[in-house]
Image: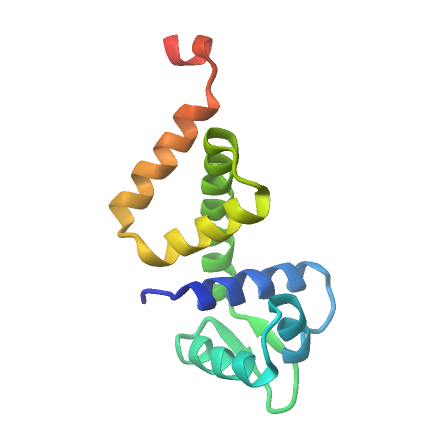
Length: 131
């Protein structure tokens, strides 16, 4: 399943809220993302059909195991790209995070791997590169 930018942002918001340990309501996701509750409701339905989230009617929402694994993978990839953009190109953390999330949703897997490799190579100093 290819995820959109909005779906990735929603999964990452759910992951962050999950780590807070509280029961998650769609209104909480709405606040984190800065979007309307109906938008979040539609997004949760889409993610639910993909078996990434579970939601009780008028109740709490949570990531499934599949959703948790994917959200953690997306977070790690986003963070690697974020560091590339902030360190190599001087973007702010907010701009770097936005760019990384957009690229996660828009680039093919091979292109993402190349960017991640560049991020890893860029984080090494001259001594580490010589090894």
